Image 1 (tube, helix red, strand yellow):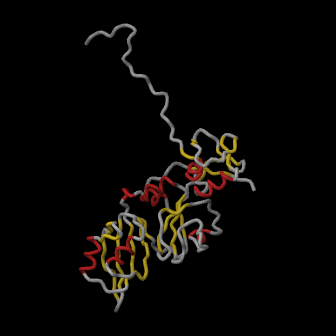
Image 2 (image 1 turned 135 degrees about the horizontal axis):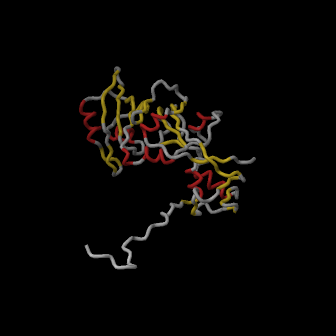
Image 3 (image 1 turned 135 degrees about the vertical axis):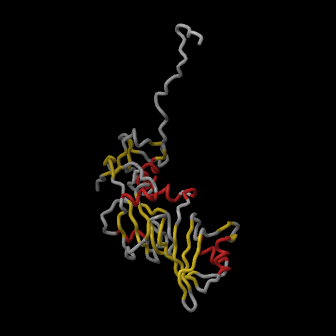
Length: 268
């Protein structure tokens, strides 16, 4: 080994710190679990939000929640409890915070609960029913709904005809609808009557109205569609229109939870 020359160091400089990701202010407030992004944008436009004591009216202002003090109506954001709910959505409700057509939304199910703002994790269309998740943990929700998660979702579907082996095979093989290839991961017949039957269908991706579109392309109508499980979490005996908090092991079984969020006490 050659001796090291005096005064010459081969050590690399030590990084003093990694860059901290910064997001727009409205997105940061939403990720803190205080409100939806749309509501946060409204508060910012109304001058109700300040950062480090200064009112900010730009919803896209780069913000670092770990280093800057965010306040709403003068109330500074502080630690907030993570909440995870399972809801049994009835038919006729829209999965959104507000509907421009004035239709009832899934938030009617949480009226009077005393819970903070929560967001639906994924969606069920107005005519569909069954298991729907809510949380203020946006990282957890994103992990569940990410296209590459391939988390199985199980549905019980009543159709307007009696199926045969050819129909079930065609559903597994998939169809091309509006230029998009759609298929189910698994399907089996549960039971049948004289004219109608129930199928159990499993998806591992979340395309818009995927089951209805596959069946419609095959000339089959849907009479009822109920989501009965998301991954290992089953709807079980939860009453229609009811909700319950998930147990810690149920949360982890779906996706890793994020660190605690923030909460804020707002005046007025």
